[in-house]
Length: 470
Picture 1: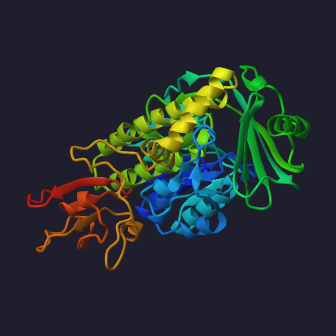
Picture 2 (picture 1 turned 135 degrees about the horizontal axis):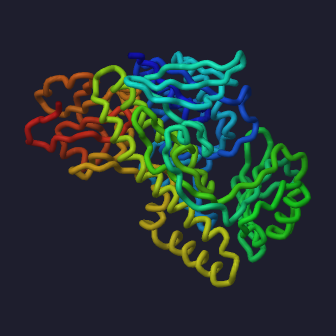
């Protein structure tokens, strides 16, 4: 039986998954329909948890060097921002980095790991057979078939893999359209991001690398089910002027586009030897810039599990936990992006009062503001577990000689053992002896903690209890 894994789609999710699978020793082929990378960047924001994911593989520095750091986030572009300094992370920022550049960096990483990335190769269908899936491909030199042990659809909201596997994608159609323009501004707003909400609409302006600004927002006339047509620079200028009172001297558009609040989620993230991740599994309004981040975290969850199964170190049913853990995260993603859509299009007097009330709560209730920030940043994700720490994401614990994220670079489980007489080695795990230097009472009360390759806590042994790690 083949051990090859085929990934459809060379977007951020597919590229990160390819690198993770290569780190696990799997044979990986990525098939991407586009011959060239899309120069237009739908996604822009890299959130704190995603920076942690990059750091746990030692590849965060190029992103930190090139991205524009923004120390705040927003919920529905409310006036009062979410202070990311409240977050328990080494990276209390978002990074503004164009998706095209993010993909370029991720592709370099995947190729360095040894992934076979084929551009201009379109997956047209698949059939499942005993022990393998046969993937039909239309490439530059004609049609061919690839046999794979598993196929992962990272091929976007119109996923061919999802359709071929017969996985339903229910949800709601568009009822609101937004607009965006990546333009040059001769009179930009003050440094950092800018926002304004009035009865005439909502505007968010974010600086981009390369001297551009992204202007995005909604207007009352955009609350409609029919597509408004192609966005023009004159229309963008009129909408921005109506909201902000000026157009900031916009010119030389690099990209003008619209987006909608159509929201859907795959009923299953796995069917047999076919799995889904990223936009193939969930689509939503791009509120808060979370989509790319959730996709990379899908890949982080799936990569180590699929690698372990292909290596023969874990049973096939480990892959069922991918759906069990990530489907609720996708459902929560749709919930809070739809809630933000309602707030961002609340143009009536009553709607604006609701926005004002929630904004005041963010300013006056630190616990509320922190809960929203943790949700948007991805730090709040917790998978099921009996102990309060099991399933949570582990912070970058500091030791005298290393950090947890450095220990995770190899993509293997990490056993943190603080016993005076260390327990026997856990098969397949990197064992580190010694207590963290961090002042964390909940961690100090534990003798051992087993960390999964994706950085979430797998198991713990409270102080004084027998070690029961496998």
